[in-house]
Every structure is written in structure tokens, then in C-alpha cells.
Image (cartoon, rainbow, N blue to C red; front, side, top):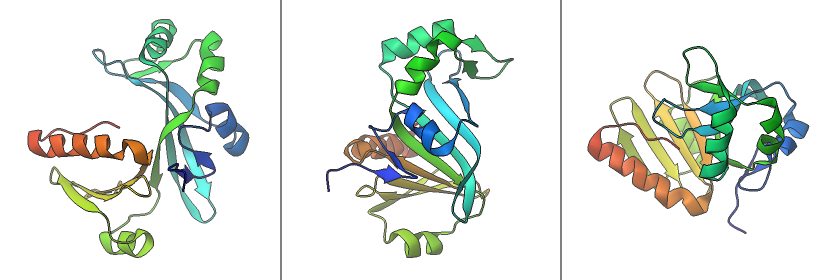
Length: 182
């Protein structure tokens, strides 16, 4: 009713990484994910997550002001040739105070559109982004259910108030044939 989304005990825009660790443990990888010319995003990743009988991977995007994110990246250590930058130990406290803004859950099982509709209802909109990506959009739930032809489906939860911007980026991707970023 208040326009917020709560998934896996996490309320988007409110629950901090520190609170997530209290709920789900500290078996996670934390870092800034960015290509050389990107500002990137601060992300926490659980490689093994279970919600009752459902298992998968959980990726949390944390909300930080751009200037603060840039400062963290300046002090971070790049891990090999990857796009992951490990935070400086002095910056962990800042990360643990950052609220979760996006939740990506990658289930260990494949979804299909029939199962998705049975579980979540009829989507408000369906967008085909590239040949392999079909997005079922549920703005009232803050859910973009991404069905991938290779079976690596994603349930992406965003703040409902930001869903319009997300949909607009998807539409731009459809028109320009590039993949969107949350």
C-alpha cells in the first residue's frame, strides 16, 4: 500500500546491506562492477541462496550517490582483468549502510511464460528485447521477469516508483538493439 516492494525480507530503498547480512549471512561477494568507461554499481552477490524450496543466485544492487560511488571506486582494487573492483577495507562501513535498490534473483530452475503467468498473473506489458530476452513487466509488484532463451531467467525487483524509467530504458533497447542495465 505504501508503494514499497519487499522481497526475501528486503524492502527496496530501505533495507541496508548490513541488515541483509543479518538476515541472510555474510557469505557474499561485494564490489563495484564497472567497465573501464562506466561509473558502475555497488553490488553484493550470494552465489547460493535459498528461499524455502526455491534456490538460485541473489544479486543486490546498492544505492549510493554517484560522487560517493566514484570515491569508493578510486580506492578499490581491481581484481584481475575483470570488471569487479574489491572495496578498500575502510569503505566497507559505507557499503553496509547503503540501501538495496534492485534485487536480481536467478532461479536454479527454468521458468516459462505459462508458469510465470500462473504465479504472478497477467503482465501489464511484455517486451521482446533481442531475440533471446522476453520481459514480462509487473509494475505494481516492481517485477521485471526476464525469460531468457538460454534458460538463465531473472526475476528483477525494482521500486515501483522507478518502474516507468526502467520500462523506458527497455523500450530504448528494443529500438536500438542494445541490452539495458538496471
